[in-house]
Image (cartoon, rainbow, N blue to C red; front, side, top):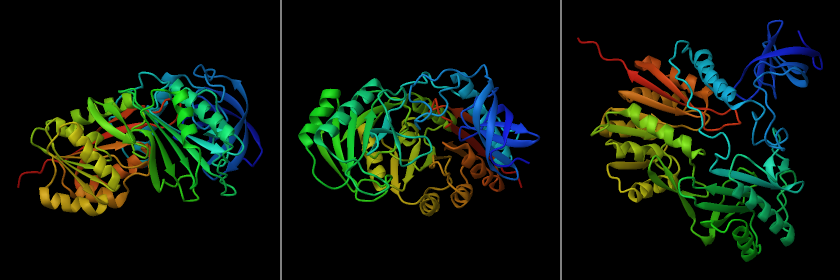
Length: 453
């Protein structure tokens, strides 16, 4: 058994969800970050548990053929990426394997049909939203990897467009000239919180949001700085945060210039996206995923569809356009209103959106409309959880399509459906987040046909 600060040689055989490489030494699993499959590394042991150990790389003894030079000079300290040192085909293969392993290990689906991952057409410049943080030690940048209270000041980034980086530089210069004080999470003092840049990849529109604490600042100078860095910005807004947490939502959003939203196109549908709107981050891959869900839901003409965690209607609108009679359920009132507005924007009928907790609302929806032909759910990263999944199972839906952004919560959620007579038909992974360990997956389940009496 290892003890802390022991050194050992580890051969990395695979990558785990969370980004670390995995190897075995004398039968014990060892997790090592900043490695690639095929690496042989010298590592120093940190935490030791009964079934595994964690270690950090001292040196790479033999580099994997999949190891490459990171493109970004900030890679390593910056928390924006975790896998830039791994060739993209190997990243995609690792994500497919992670989905397969999670289904087997955490859900018991060892024979699941996991299709080949649908890789991103371009693993760079793919994000349509990024949030840059202010901090006294670095003014404006991205959080350091694994450190919520420190940032890396960046002057280049390959995740969003070059215009986004220009906006960061322009706002950083404005902040210095205006002598505005960044918020310090350690002392809970300061004014500036973060800068949000959203981009419509299908429209070319941009929305810039400055998030601060309460107080005044030179608005005209800020708008001029943004316009100088990116003249084509569609809208500039100011979000006021009164809570102490960096993750606190704005209590109020003020329009400074232009429109308070941008428009984006996914699968041929237009969506209005505001500062706080949840929307898939990779537009190109979101289109592919929406099209896949619609295909798996066919035939849709005249059939009933329930879309849980529907957000602003990303899946609901596409399912309705294909002929489904769709009821969307969403907990966030602003998203429900946005979904209704997006349906009008696209001239779609046959949709109803309901505000409420899925666990509470779903039984009422089923009682009113009967067992749905198709039930789609796209829960948060933490998953739907057992109580919701049992309600889903009791809905009697003929087909369930589960869109997941976390294979480690997907697997146990799917397992909850087995006692209700569902079989897992297939799982299709999608890579929406190149250079990171995150992976999306669409699982399809069908209800057993009832045996004749």
